[in-house]
Length: 371
Image (cartoon, rainbow, N blue to C red):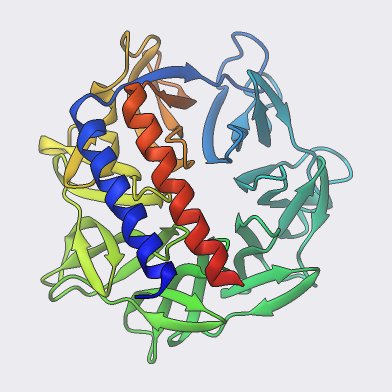
């Protein structure tokens, strides 16, 4: 057996053992990330969409007040700051979707006078316009090497070292890229030939593979992937588009992750330990709740917060997480406004040690694959 196979097997074994401990007593502390609005500003809101290994968070905030603006933000150690937009007049704002370990941010926003809407890269807080001409573009994610992915002109697109590349899809006219890992694999969706159906897609070395659907499914989309190439997203089954299901694609299989009793669930992100976050509707579609899937377990994150939800009525969606298990997303406050949150795990000491050991081994596998 190759040494990389042995290392990988050991890493997965350690992570599986850690999962058994973690599922028994998983809990989190909750942090309200605030907004960019003035204290008490009417209509102010925020949503978090990305987090890196250092716990830096990005997203979007509406300032509310008399002259409301929507601005991308970066949050570090309790401080939320606005990311400058492409609008020279400072009127139109932006949204930030992802951040890598170096603090480089991927997102999108309006150009001066809202003449166009373009993908943006922020490096040290300075925005770079990724758009070309008048085409609509969005940068949805960024990896450790600084490669960004998203879409331009309704085509999945990659920006690497200043060079833009269109990623060929699955034969249809439209495609989108939503996530990229440090191996350069890209997850997204693409129309099939004839544009009658859409499928989750995984690009490896620029070549797209159709990931398929659940039995009888008419569509699927891939929204996140980890360092091992495990992909998550959503789709339907039995040609019933009234119900959508959180999915994972792993080892050639399409796996239904389950939900909270309602008609829909969506998986948005996955870390190296195969922890998956997203959202699911509760019974009777009463509310959408932030959800965690790990191993064979499913957890409504609203039930796992130490000390209660504070000013939140409920946590609505978990949008991203890092390998330490920190989770970000957004929820509804008791006054009805939307607010970004951070969940920080409170693990048993032995669980944390096991998790870190497993992630270290799997990281070694990933490095070997790149060399």
